[in-house]
Length: 548
Image (tube, rainbow, N blue to C red; front, side):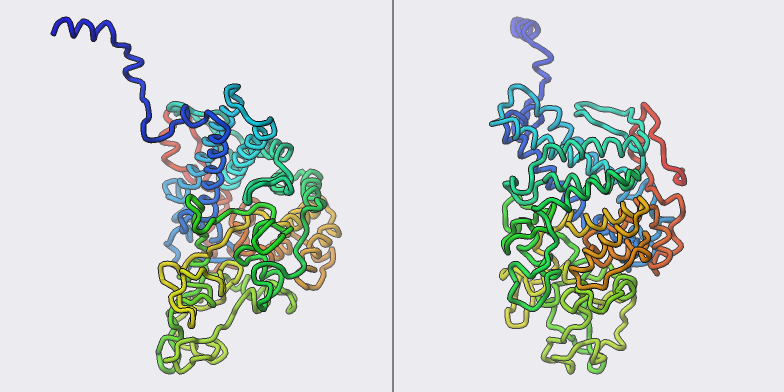
């Protein structure tokens, strides 16, 4: 026994003995050894970014659509973030989740960028390495862009953190924008052109140039914003779609409707070329490891399938149906502003019967209103429809109207859907679309005191929609916001748009019946999460004004 203990004492190397060797998961040291590892790492950041912005916790993602001028959360003033005054506090889970989500993206990008130039990693050529670096730089910049809009100045971390760190300090907001511009500019120089792209959903030079346009607008560098947008607009690979196309071209509809059908969103989609698509989040339905669904169908969709007729009180519908957009829960309610007030031309395609469906036919044979339009017939006149939760309209751009997968349909004759499969879009999601590039350039032209050029860009978008042209005298920031709502409603994260412009309080007070009066001046920034301040024990992570 004594000999054994002596051998153990002299032969034990404590560092080796304590070294952890992962056997059932990848650690950084084992994960970045060959080009495919870096490609997988970038793919994971794409997936996580999509989850944060479009497909993750649905209640969280909806926070970027309310409280705004286009929608409200109808559950009451105390629900979620309806009352900023009461609920937008440092301890709020939404406040924490967006912060930690962004820094997770940043951490993964920093790890990749810190390891990719290792001389032991042999890429086929330098272009492959630089493209991956450009993608990681873009995604890091995109995360800092979100942090800068929501929280203002934040800690800027540009290297992999391999151990505990409790001394973060906030950089100024201007420094955050400088970092975003640096990351996006590097991406714009090194990302491929659209024609060189090998996979749907990956980033291109145009995506970086589009993103730079918004940041240059934020920093009021109007000339650079105009130049960056112009680089996209003048790129021959991109153009607004003006003719019908795609997977459902033979059905009644219009080109704006086509832009949002399944299979039509990617630049090289199943339905043919979509020259308007710049960056598209991939759903990858039925693909192992694919992204999750966009829950806008469920949250924005009206609860029509629970409506009963005025005279007989029988259900008007057999249940959630494919032709009516699935199983809505009416949590996110479109405001009268976007339903009625912004439409300044009766011929505007974006307000056509195909794109905003304001009346549908009852399809329950047992109902006295069977085959009749539920609004026109008066079928729902006395239904308690507080805040239009049970019926307002179907926004076809967010729902697979008549286009659910076969396996989601319980009865092909009625369109009845399987309940568990009835709340998804089964569709990709636009990050950037060329119509927004035009509207961003219009905003930059307005900032540069050139309303005539701003009107010209707005009119390009309106012309595609068959809407009447405007004049330079019509253009101000409110008109641009109106046009963004007409073109981009429930695509853009409206709260972020209003926050970057400093207009959320003003617009909510005017258009949002739920939360008017509940946003104060200091809410132009969200609070720094309490747990981040508490854990940062070796330096002061300052809280934003108004939240102390």
